[in-house]
Amino acid sequence: MSVQERKERERAGRERLIVATARELAEQQGWDAVTTRRLAERIEYSQPVLYSHFRGKREIIGAVALQGATEMAAAVRAATAAVDGPRERVAALARAYLDFAERNPAVYDAIFQLDGGLAYAHEDTPAPLKDAFAALLESLGEVAGDGVEPGLFTETFWAALHGLVTLTRAGRLPPENTEQRVKLLVDRLAVD
Image 1: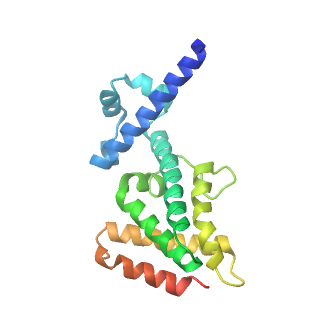
Image 2: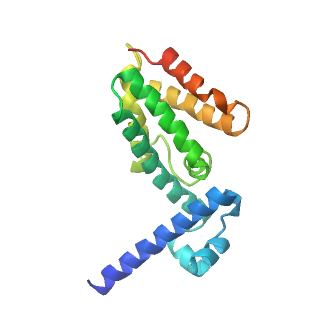
């Protein structure tokens, strides 16, 4: 292995450590607790080392968002692959999405609530974000109904799921009714 390859591997390892540590700290104490100073202390590198990887917290949030989008897409695909039938896939998708948001609140916020400097719904949207949307579209597109553009249907269904996540987390909706809400969404929106 060349010196350059070793340095690149070490750099990639430091970057993964920074992202993992930021994510862990955010999940434990919230994003306000994530500062370059605290990260530097936790990973035992200087702040200039952090800044050699990320220009600041915004880029770190963006890196966590991209990692989280990849994980969410995988969770949705795994859940939908495990069931037969279009409506069953939509219900599995909804549950997987809501479960991901509940298990990873700080990551969910990085993807959908916080400014990570990422472009959404544009040509230059990063691939992990496009793939997360594609994971939703794969199942939702088949139940959009005649004359309904699948992408638009997916955006609308996704918005409903996001609303459920946001309102439940804020204590505006009782969590014990989540399954009934999923059933209602599937029954009323998904066409066979």
